[in-house]
Amino acid sequence: MESVEPRSSWTFVTHHARILAMILGDPETRLRDMAGTCRITERAAQAIVADLESAGYLTRSRRGRRNHYEVVPGTLFRHPAEGHHRIADLLQLLADLGARPGAAGDPPVNGDRHERDTQLTRGRRAQPGHATDPQVSPHVSGQ
Image (cartoon, rainbow, N blue to C red; front, side):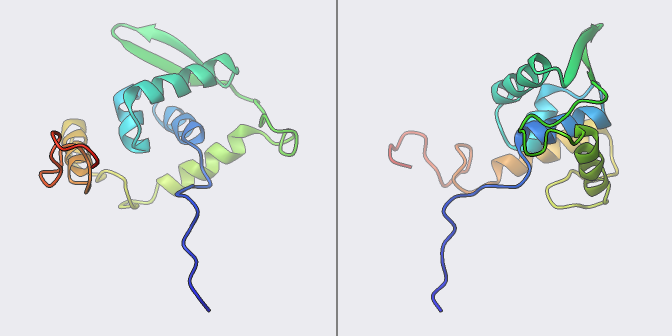
């Protein structure tokens, strides 16, 4: 039997769900951290937070120079097929999955926040084809 290539690179968990789970785990997480974990831009993470806030899944307030987020308890899934289920159940599952030390793609559980952030940044730069990859010249089109 011939192997079939996947049509696209999709996942079961959306960026919206990942970001909401991150906020539940750390209500003062930064947009930069959300973006890094989801491997999206800060602007995309900001748009997702705005989506979640306008849909009533979280609230945002300022505490000094930082945003503080709170997940609204009792919210339900948006799609009618799952509309009778609470979002908290999915978030608990994601929190349980993310609690495993050394899970793929997670920063190390030891070390300070700056060290973890630096390691995440290095990981993004090391990705083949990324604009900061030394093998990719930003001056050559078509790459």
